[in-house]
Image (cartoon, rainbow, N blue to C red; front, top):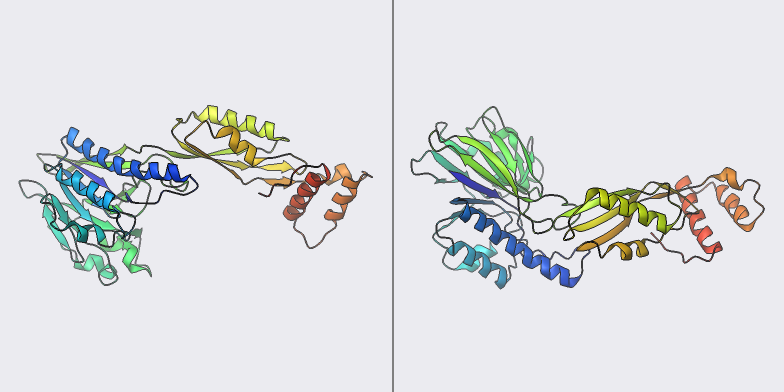
Length: 370
C-alpha cells in the first residue's frame, strides 16, 4: 500500500514576485497543472490515497477556475481517495463552494477525526484542523490504538513546546509516545523530516512549486509505503515534480574591476552549475570590490536574461578602499577621498560607498544606486 503526502500547494497564488504579468499568469496555470500531474502520478503508480496536509489554496477567495479544476481532478479519479485537511490559508472557501462534496473527498474539522485506510482496519489516519481553542493541548486530546499503524495529519509550525501563536504551532513534545507512526505535516515549504520518538517520525513534504527565491531547489511530494503483510511503514520517498525550479547563484566579484569582468564571473559560475533553461535564477553578487570598480547591474541582468526563464541580479557586494594609494595623490579624486576618510560620523562601509559614487561622478559615469 502506498500513500502520497503533499501540502502547501497554494493554488491561486498570485505568483507575481519579481516576474512579469505574463509569466505570473503562466506560473499560476503551471501550479494547477503540477497538482494534476501529481494525481496522474498516483494513478499511473497504483496509489489510491492522497493526503493533503493543508494550504491547498493560497487565499479564501478561490477563483472559479481553480475550484472547478480541483473538483474535476478529484471527481475524475474516483479510484483515489483524497483526504484534505485545511490550513491557515484555506479558510473554508473551497469546501463551502463545492456544494455537494465528492464521494472520494474526505474532510476534517476542529475535532480529531479518524479514517480507516486499509481493508483490514489496521492503518488509521487521524487529523484535525488547528484553531486557537484546540491547539493548546493536542497530546491530551489525541487517543490512538497502539496496535494499529497510525498516521496523524496536522498543519502548522513544528515546535518542541507550546508557543504563543497556538493556532499555528504544533508542540511535538505533546505528541511523543502517543502511538504515532507517521506525522504528516504541512506549513513549511521545504522538505523536512525527523524523529518524533522511538516509534514514529514527522515529515513536511514542502510545496509542489517554488514561488519565490526563498523557496529554491527541488519541490514535490512524499510517497509513503506500507507493507501489505505487516501493515507497518516500510519506507518513504521524496518525489520531485515541480514544473520549474528556482535557484540562487552566488558569485564572488571581489577581484572584478569592470562590468565585463563581473559578467565573465557570472558566466563561469553558470556553466559550472548547468541549471536548465526553464529555471528561475537569482544571481547574488557578493564580496568586497574596489571602490573604483565599474559595475552596472542593469546591464548584467540584460546580458543574462536570455539564458533562463527568468533572471534577477541582486547586488550584495560591498566596497573597499585602499587609502594608501591616495595619500600623495594631488588630483581632485585624491583630495575627495582624503576628505571622505576624515569624516568621523561615517562608518567605513559608508565611506567606501560615498567614495564609489564620487568616483563615478568624477569619471562621468552614470550613478546607479544599488
